[in-house]
Image (cartoon, rainbow, N blue to C red; front, side, top):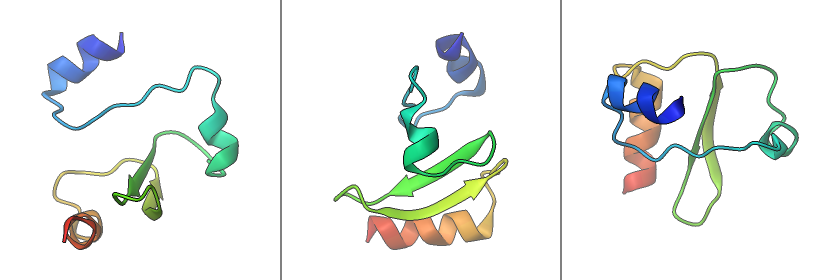
Length: 68
């Protein structure tokens, strides 16, 4: 189901699955969807509970900062 959804939306970033839902406790997820931006060292730099659009300025700024 996830593969079809990702292909339908044209998603090009990595999608991680967590069948045991360990990430819910690790990142204290309050609801879904939840988005996390980790740097190259695996440090959580940004998160959002709820949808994130491709034009979200806060997300884009955080992404730019992590990629530098």
